[in-house]
Image (cartoon, rainbow, N blue to C red; front, side):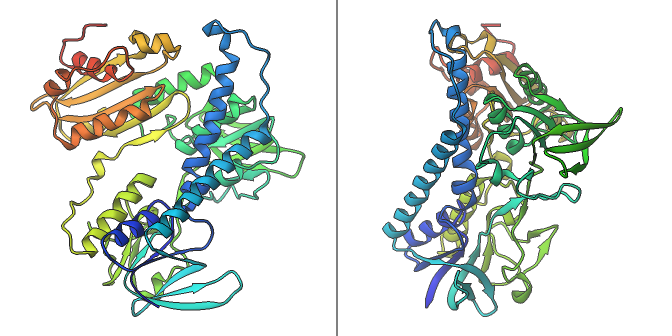
Length: 462
C-alpha cells in the first residue's frame, strides 16, 4: 500500500505526528509493535503519575490530623495501587485508538523497519512480513531504560522503570541508582508506601540537571521523608545470589555494602536505533542518536526522525512538538524551528520540581549579568493554608534588558505553574512586565510575581 506518510512508533511523538499529518490531508499510517501510545502512555508518564497520585493520597490520609481530621490508620493495598495505574494507562491507550480511527489513520501492528526506496517492512507477531511505501517515513521509535555495564537488569531483583510499575509485591527495601526524574519519582512512591529507600547518585547533587538550589531543597525534603541519599557515589556491583541484593557502593570515604530486596536502575534512557533500518538506508547517527536538521530531515531524503532517537531533551512534550513541526514542513507549511532552550522540565515527586531556561550557573557561564529573585512557599498564604510550605520559586533575569532567562520551582503543584514562564519567555516578557502583571491571591502562582519583585528589590511579603 502507498502512503504519503508512514510513522514507525506510536508514542507521543509518533501518534501526534500521524494525527497532524492526517489533519493536513496526508494519507497516513502508523506502525506499532506493542501498544498505541508507546512507552510514555503505557509504561512511562501516565501510569507513573497514577502511582504517584496514590502515594500522595496515602500521605494525605497519614497526615489528616494536621488538617483537623481524625481517621483510622490507613493501609496501602499495593496490588490495588498497581491495578489502578494499569487501568489508567489502558484507558489512555484506548483513547489513542479512538483518535486513530477518528483521523482515518491506518494502524499497522508489527515491528517496522525502514528500507531503501521509501519503503517500510513490517514484521507481524506471527512472523509474516509485508512491505509498504510512503513518500515520507518518520522514525519515532523512542527509548528504553539505560542498562549500566556493572548493573545488568534481570527483571526480578535488578529492575528498570518498567518492572518497577508492576512488581508483584511491595519490597521492604530498595536501592535506586540514579536521581534523575525517573529515580526520584519512584523513590518518593515507594518510600511513601513504606519501603526503605536509598538513592545512589554518581554526581555531586540529586536531580543534577536542575539548578543547584533546587537540588539542595529536594535533598532536604527527601531526607525529612526518611529517604537515604548518597551523592558522589557509584554502584560497582550487585550480588543477587542470596535472598535479596548486596550492593557494593563506592563513595568518597571508601566502599560500602547496602542490602535490599530490589535494585532499581534509573540511570536514564537510551535511544531505540537498533534494527530500524538505519544501516540499510544509510541514515547517519552520532553518539547513539539519529542526525537530523532543524526540521527533522535525516541524511537521506524522505526519511525523518523525532523524539528520543534525536538530540534534545528526551521528553514526551518535546517529541510531540517535533512531530508537529516535522509534518507541517513535509506538508509545505513554514513552521518555526523548536526552541530547545524554552522546554519545561517537570519531575512529579513530592515536592514537585519544574524548570525552564537557564540555571543560575548556566546564565553566568553564558556571560549574562543576572538579577536573581526567590520566594519561599513558607511565606505563601495559599501554601500555608494547604499545608505544603516546602520549596520556593526562583527566577533569573538579565540585568541589562530584563529578559526572563529561566525559572526554577520546587513545591506543591509547580508542574502546573511552569507554563506561565514558558509562555512569558516565548512572548519575550520582561521582569517589569511580569512584576506588574497582577496575580490572584491567595495562590501558589503569585510566588512567581513575588520572586520577580525580590529580583528587583520590590518584594512585599518577605
